[in-house]
Image 1 (cartoon, rainbow, N blue to C red):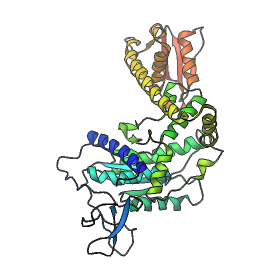
Image 2 (tube, helix red, strand yellow):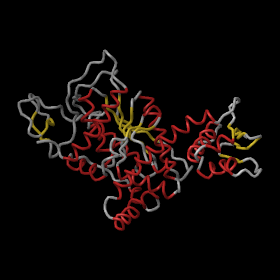
Image 3 (cartoon, rainbow, N blue to C red):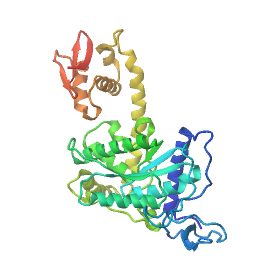
Image 4 (tube, rainbow, N blue to C red):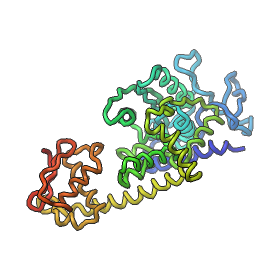
Length: 397
């Protein structure tokens, strides 16, 4: 009897991503491949406890497996236990390391369990990181509990990183910035090839709606990419799976999960959208809204990628010998391509990408399409854009 369908779905999603990572980061030629066996994990309907030969410890084996086969080792005990820990065979240090970012919620715990199961079979080292934002009482203790759960799954390294959340851009954006900075630092510290994130199809739908509400362009409507970050560091295996599948996978594996109260707090925009906005849309439009929004994200991403590539090719053709942008040539470009060229130029001049909004690009664009002798335009990062002698000059003010 195979695993529960929800468990099979999350494992398949992770297996596909791990294969991609192995293709991009193959082990060193002299790295021995470990035996294919699963990491220790809690019992559930798909496993049963049998005595390990010659030992009083219990071991976890797949349900229905022959009992005369040596079972996998028991779950790794906490550090400091008197008994010596029993470790499953690990890949050699030269094998690629993949980390999972785990908050302790259902999505990331399901992801951690799938990584712990699949990574050893492919010769990949697997670890976990939880970020303590310090925004709630007892957050440090909860982070320690998550580290313990990751350790019991067989993930190594498993650690908690405390961050200080600023106030720039609102609480949600500030927490996100602090979290990704901590994850980037952990990846560099451990030499990780990739970090897995537990965003689901539901998260993708919410992201699309948030971008739509802001009146953002097609890039914002494209939601979260399956692969993002420097060098493709971040991977999101669950973007085609719904949130309920991840929760069901945790339940059938008896994995404890923590539900962040911020996820139900109406003070947060995403929380209101999740518990009020999306249900209202489904009531008005019928089921399938989440799937449709996720599909819109993928279609928008394909279009945005094509337009970005077009803008990259067109940029060289609209500059003069001195590298300045020629307004007449910019005017001849399609608006979607021209605005991308302008945005790239502003960022290259020093404008922070996260602070450069559509209204800024529209103001620069009017120097091309609605020239009436207007003066310089101030942009974030102390960057100034102005028209001079038929050229568009964007530089530090």
